Image 1: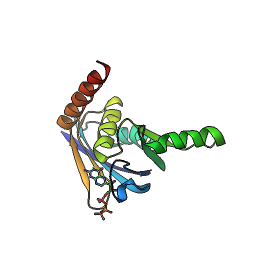
Image 2 (image 1 turned 90 degrees about the vertical axis):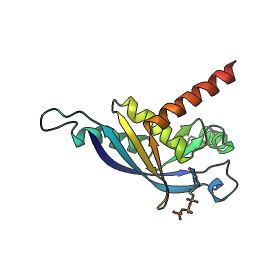
Image 3 (image 1 turned 120 degrees about the horizontal axis):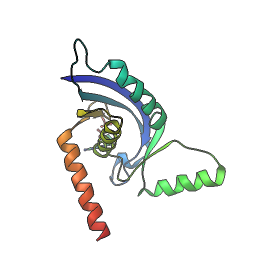
Image 4 (image 1 turned 30 degrees about the vertical axis):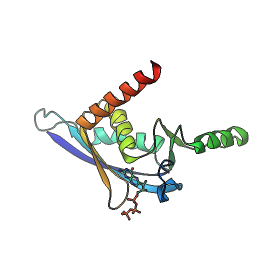
Length: 155
Ligand SMILES: Nc1nc2c(c(=O)[nH]1)N=C([C@H](O)[C@H](O)COP(=O)(O)OP(=O)(O)OP(=O)(O)O)CN2
């Protein structure tokens, strides 16, 4: 059985690798639609509130009104330098790759899985017209690709 739950957060980002408007620092209202695999026990399965109790604070603490940033983006070093010099603290959500919806979906699929939920798929909406549907198969393939890249880098 699948339970669908929807969430949202606001965050800044840019994609420094793209040679267009997306390399400008800008913001989105990100929308998440989670498809959770659950098991029924009697009249109920996982309570809707059990998802919210973990996912709402996770989004508030780690993503909402923060900035998604790639460690390889030159802006990351600049922001770190600024924080060190001024003592000011920015809420940064650090990704190992560019902050595309595809990479964000991988990170969030991993983090929600680590909370103990089993996702069948995750939809991540970046704009009014663009949504990425990221399945468990996509996640498995992404993990395999990342492991292979890491092995190649260390060999
Ligand atoms: N496959 C992907 N394509 C694009 C991504 C991405 O993450 N994965 N990201 C972007 C940009 O970050 C951008 O913010 C969104 O771009 P775009 O859809 O072109 O923005 P619009 O303002 O045209 O949105 P509308 O809702 O269509 O007005 C680009 N591509």
